Image 1 (cartoon, helix red, strand yellow):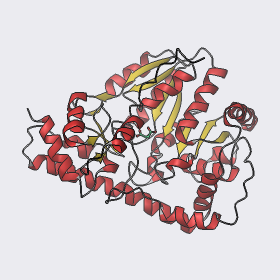
Image 2 (image 1 turned 45 degrees about the vertical axis):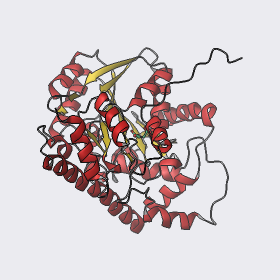
Image 3 (image 1 turned 90 degrees about the horizontal axis):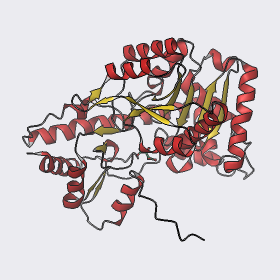
Image 4 (image 1 turned 60 degrees about the vertical axis):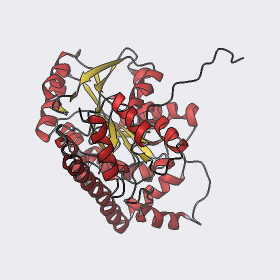
Length: 398
Ligand code: LMR
């Protein structure tokens, strides 16, 4: 039956983890996948999550959730994106379902887009998280790109981005990273977001926000929602994907949310029913455990405070490692500028290293990262930062 099936290419991000695990070297370093580590390089379970788990134990039955998932979890999650006192929430204008983390939310949206706007395309930034391409490809939505990153300044190419927004046909769909852009760590400023939102209004474009890193840009989830709030103030009917993989460390629990702002409550009811309809033949209904953890944490003011403190702690450790990595490379007398390590934000540094330089890091130094030069700063620790700096200097010096 399957003679014609060739092996699939390795995933550019998760394939790095596989290669790292297979390397027996005691010096190996994984700065590939965006997964937070403590300063000893160990995965972290947040204290708020441990406490929520304690409360879940004994109370959990194994019943199905509804197709749209946990309403409590979804309600709490919408407050994070749209604001505690959002009129859209009060007026029940948001159609939302629990999703299998950010990937699942993007995928359901892409399928929804295909079903209800079958001739549309999606504009995706260059570069973007590699899986975005897979998601819209598998949903059969044609992809276009828009300028985002400027390789020379290692910052935002705002002028070209705005040109692309202006030149796209009216009413185009755009995928935007709400904060802590992956892989570049480069976000528009508030002023730039306002201009983007204004231009979207002029052109009648639809903004779909992927918000996988809320809290990781500034350390404060509320501030990290600024981009979305600006669009909402301008009256856009946006879409949004949210994930608790990073900011609650619930990577493997696959818990997130997909939401679409609608004209009114009636439309929101219809849209939600269609989102559920998309979920049903794919996975029927989402898993219960992660949703319970999130509901408990966000539903208890003390646990929520603890969570906010822990998110800030993770963001701060990463900021500290940015300074340390930059200082260590500069100390070695690198002739190159490494300012972007501390200018960029969120979990990643888009280093500017070439695929060949990355290959050398892996072969000669057992340092694992994606070939686009992205360093997951969350994997950098006091223990490996010097080693990493030396290796980077070695492969980048002329
Ligand atoms: C990443 O970009 O490393 C993360 O979002 C993990 C993933 O699923 O690719």
